[in-house]
Length: 517
Image (tube, rainbow, N blue to C red; front, side, top):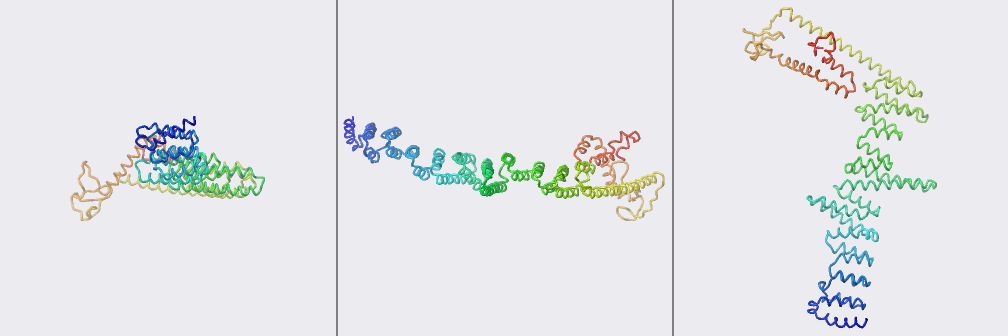
């Protein structure tokens, strides 16, 4: 067998010197290549690097496989280089020769940008495993270039987003580098996708959770406990800084769900404050006994959501049974009661009912609130009585004026026109309101009767307002809507009662007197 191979080599060695013959008979080259493979030595390598060798002389893929099967990896690599087959070069370097450094050199320096992305996606996990830092930097440079391209090419942002996502997938088995690449995107890319922020936040949450777990496992060793406690605080600080720094770039409700899942109470508080989730904040402060924050929350939102004050008072009253917290709680109750004095819509009876649930509450705590509340109510009663008296006097005067106009002759003794201020000359017009005009100073009217120019505008406004009120009293839906939305329901009923909404229900009030109440 060896004798036959040697004969073929000698024969084809002569053929090798004749390029014209090789071009006409390409299969000779393939056969010669096979013979060299069988024979071994440097003949195969010399043939491949010779100037007469042409990749079109044979099927290079088959030749490469033949060399690989015969453990001629150097020759297989030379064939791939001659053929310009980058895919085969990388496969040989990475899968067979384990020469990861040279493979990464080829990817970085000898191919187009699009091919870099393709081959980094394909061989990235293996390169990261063997050349962690250098491979990561190569991927980060490609990511940086993608971000720049997306900024300059606004027509196809989704294309670059997809390529960035594909680069991120390279680190699926490497937590630290995955986190590092996400952090690079967040800081480098102002238009970063929300999913990137969510992924980075979740990595920080896992770090914080693992640090807490390690701390619990090493409670026996005081030194280890101390070290782990500082680690926990560091991880928590990194997480809180990230949440605060990029608060406008992630889905807050999604992140709130993650924080609740990992039980990061301080992060939950921050997100609840961002979303203005008052009830969730109140629950958080109560669970952590943050009395000052409970009062601040009520002061901030209590005007709109008065139920927060009731919750706070109920909570503080329930804490009076704790002897250690009793003094602080009583101070907080005084502050809450002082604020409740300014909210007239909250009934004092409700406050007394809540206070009665604890036997530990001192009367002195409620004394000031009740005294101030009674004084406020008394002042309001006095003020209302004065208002009622004044209105009754005004009504009596108006009724007397109406009676006088109906039963007594009116004397008009004015000497000058109310419009032009000149001396009156006949013909003149006298109006019952007391104004007198020249006939030519009063504009003609479409109706038979003419109106006082001074008083007609005001009279029209009053009549229009009365007409509107008469229309409103027929709108029962508006009444019930206002009644439902208002905290001062008695004021709504009184206002509509004054407009005559209930006039038809009273047997002593005639139907035509609606709106005159």
